[in-house]
Amino acid sequence: MIKNFNSNLRALKISVPCLLLIILMYSCSKDASEPVSSTTKKTNTLTTSTTLSTVLTSVPSGSYDLTASLPKGYVKNGTVDYTSYLQAAINKNSNVTFPNFPVLVDDAGLSLKSNSTVNFLSGSQLWLKPTATGNYNILSISHVSNVVVNNPYIIGDLTKHLGTSGEWGMGIGIYSSSNIKIIGANVSYCWGDGIYLSTSQGTTTNTNITITNASVTYNRRDGMSITSVNGLDLESPTAEYSTGTSPMCGINFEPNTSTDQLQNIVVNNALTENNAGYGIQIGYSNLYGGSNKTTNITINNHIDKRSTVAFKAAADITKRKGSETITGPLVVNSPTWRLNPSSPIVASIAENNIKLTIAKPVVEDINGNFLAQAAILSTLTYKTHMLKGSNYVITF
Image (cartoon, rainbow, N blue to C red; front, side, top):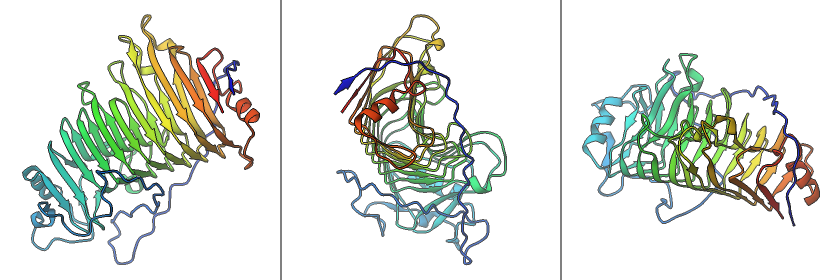
């Protein structure tokens, strides 16, 4: 069944509930200033040729043990800042392994270099020392290429942040880089986003980025934000409990300027839950203002549960500076959108050169009823859910 349904759009008014941040429990054997790890358990289990089959329990052959660069008498409880020691060792070695205990870094974070591999052992955690700055990258991948990061476990300072301004405290920041693989990341409690992909000072876009089995939870702004990329393979991410400052998405595609790109993007088996804003959001509007742009995004098997809205896509043509267009497909295959307090979808795509295709959707309403096809079609195309005159098709 294929049907195109037109209706009037009204401005969306979402009353986002004030979600409580998770109460952190502290072990009596740890210092009171110690961050606490996320308790969220990843449920996706994708395995690829580059994914470690198991979490490392010992330093791999040929990898430098970062413990060797820590000062004599180092502590294992994450209460002493070892940023300078760790960064010096990362600068000198192309393959490094974090120790199997928590280490503390300051808001300068750690920067990775090209042609390098970074491993985290079972028990390895990278904690951010509480800071007042609203802008940090705990792990920075900027202007580099050919980097692999295995099983990073990163905890921000959200519950102990010393300031109130800013929203750019990132767990992993990837900027203007190429051939980057992030495998098995667990990033939580950041002042901004868990994982952030962008350009650095308006320079080249990210290319050929693979993020596999990432878990991003309890971050203040978004679990994951992508502002510019050409070639993204996002496999089995889990993005939950984003809350604190707008837009509070699980996964957010949000160009900053007309020079950014959203090209050749595939998202497989994303699980988004309990986000105060949107499960997945795609905002095209900031791509206007320059030359004609092309885009290509495919989302397969997205599952959202209890985010305020499961899926949002928008392109506001009033942002045009002239007659420029944004052209390309947005394909959403086999989504399952469940128990969303506002609606399963908001699609306000005024750009007719962007074609939205939704295939085989499953919708469970707020009362726990799985809807029949006719009711799904009616719900997805309701006047505040789908923009009248937009280019879309829904198939079952």
